[in-house]
Image (spheres, rainbow, N blue to C red):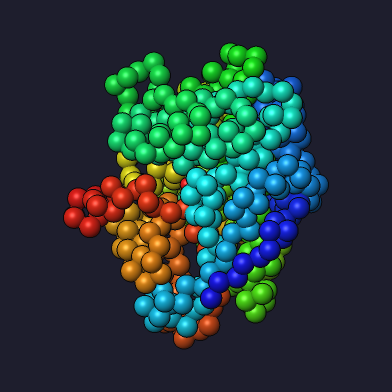
Amino acid sequence: MRWNLAVDRVPEAWFNVVPHLPEPLQPPLHPATNEPVGPDDLAPLFPMGLIAQEVTAEPWVDVPGEVLDVLRLWRPTPLVRATRFEQALGTPARIYFKDESVSPAGSHKPNTAVAQAYYNKQEGTKRLTTETGAGQWGSALSFASAVFDLECMVYMVRASYEQKPYRRVMIETWGGQVVPSPVDDPAHPGSLGFAISDAVRDAASRGDSHYSLGSVLNHVLLHQTVIGLEAKEQLALAGEQRPDVVIGSCGGGSNFAGIALPFVPDTGVRLVASEPVSCPTLTEGRFEYDFGDSVGMTPLLPMYTLGHDFVPPPIHAGGLRYHGDAPIICNLVRSGRIEAVAYPQGKVFEATVQFARTQGTIAAPETGHAIVAVVDEALAAKEEGAERVILFSYSGHGLLDLGAYDAYLHGHLTD
Ligand SMILES: *Cc1c(COP(=O)(O)O)cnc(C)c1O
């Protein structure tokens, strides 16, 4: 019921989906000139190693040995068949999940944090700045910064900073510094968009610092493809030729990309991205160029967006509260290769609680958006009386989200 790979099976190259896109990817535009941004525009914020990955059309990109060494602290992650969950749903579907919750920070995010810290270290960066919502990304980058001996400065959405102390403590335990954002407005609850503005402004103003983004950008999605590449190998070990459907929750798109992009060339494999109804970027956003942050400092990205000044309601899946989405994911949604669905958080917690009571583990609310979509797929298979192989990303554990479970279990959760 569980397929583990040996430590030497961590993929040695990342999968680049760009050559497989049905429509060409539109370039990011400079906010002042509306011209495509070039490497020089990005150099104040990112190391050249990552800028090269941002624009590459090579089908595979080698993973440096030093990065592999760190990933091997927890990778390859297990592939697990959720048989008890299947039985509870009474479905003929076979449900597999890729367990990214076993990383040091408890989510998929260290897969790119480690790579980003490595390329920055290589090129002499001393200090990284970043934003974080509930703290998942900030804690992942703080861990990766500790490994490569970099300083780490995290701008944390103020509402989370005040309500969710434990991820802040993780950031500090790994040596990072964390402050509430927006820094210049102590009465504002904050949003990811504002925290990105704070982190970009900091990095741009200092010669020793670079900025690091936890999702959305092409190189971030690239780094996450180890998830799907390992899963392919593990599904084969489990005797499956291919999944019928691959499901992941989608905030900025890196988790979904990690599990789904390696399957893009495989015709017949449906790819389903699941998001909150309260921040319905892919299902209700407009496709247009918009800023990545709230203040308007970043390049304009071609994406589905709710508007860069959209401040989502304070739902518990903090990692899914972003006004836009990765241009690569948006491109594939637009061309019809990826399907998008949205769920209210009450249904999400119903599914995560059922999962916990059968499989045991307590999922992050973000991960719950995948689980609830899995339930719908499994019940559809039951209705049709059809076998179906479902693969999903178990993107993180919910052990630091118990306040949200408390609210759900005691009837305080609103949709
Ligand atoms: C951040 C996060 C997500 C969403 O990741 P994106 O790359 O922003 O889509 C999903 N699950 C968990 C556990 C997360 O921490």
